[in-house]
Image 1 (spheres, rainbow over the protein chains, first blue to last red):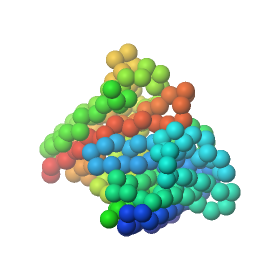
Image 2: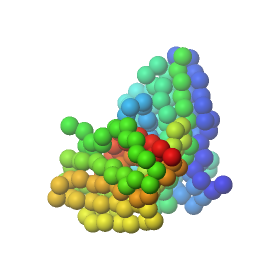
Image 3: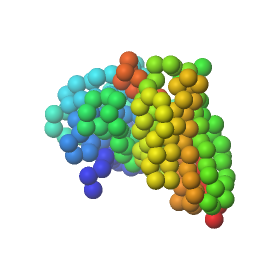
Image 4: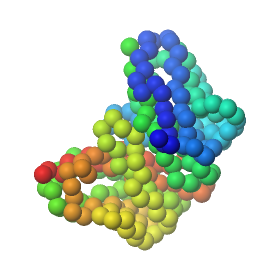
Length: 114
Length: 111
């Protein structure tokens, strides 16, 4: 399957712990986007990365959240000291070319903070 | 005011009906318009991607963009139970790096 891969699919953390979400883009794609989806809300853009570069992080909360897309390996969305309000579905999308190229989404990671 | 407004539904139609889904937007700079389908607890799947105004057809799906009214539509002909899902509109412009999504319309097609 050459689609966008995300893991884990489900993640449970207690308040104050760290959450690490991984995204492997489609083969040949070097552009990655992270979105958050809350119940009754649409997908909200968080960050746009290209290999080793953050292109746009205007949708990312200023504290506790960080993202990277290293030269080798998956893109990582890291949430430190999680709070209950971080509970959501986090989706990764990838594209072959820069924005506004077509974005293909992964299955998402559902984060639950107890 | 939200960038993109979408009626959340839910919308329930009999099999074979024509379905019309709509979004309005406020940013006149938007020129890229998409429709995604999202099944429960799955990732969004791209259905249509259109640029600027006009119509685009793909099988049973037709996307329409009316930039003068800031209004986009997705029509589904001969709807099937397998079309039951949430439909998300999304749009963007050359002046940014992000697509803006509607909240989604939940559709159920009854056999």
